[in-house]
Length: 71
Image (cartoon, rainbow, N blue to C red; front, side, top):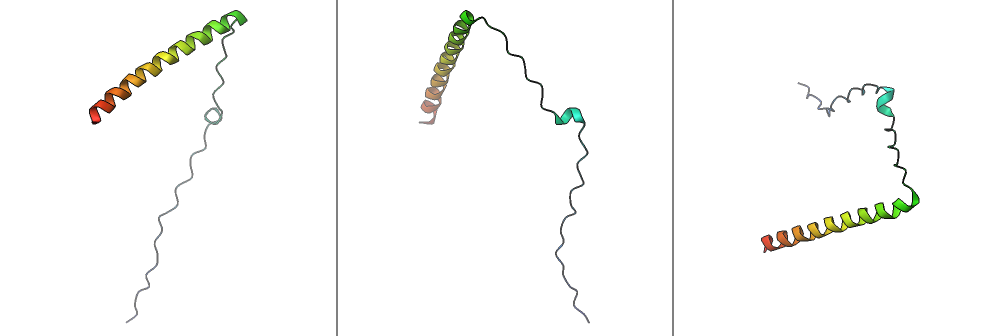
């Protein structure tokens, strides 16, 4: 009686991926930047900073509430 050889069984390789269409391979085209006159740039930046400050304050409030709940 011969002993059967045990061989390692590997899973089949993955089937090749379907070729992508040329449209899927390209990066999306960049969104054009709005054109601001130089005097408006400062105003827009100020608005952005104000919004970021407001978000930061809301996040601090949320952090304080979460810290109070975990105690």
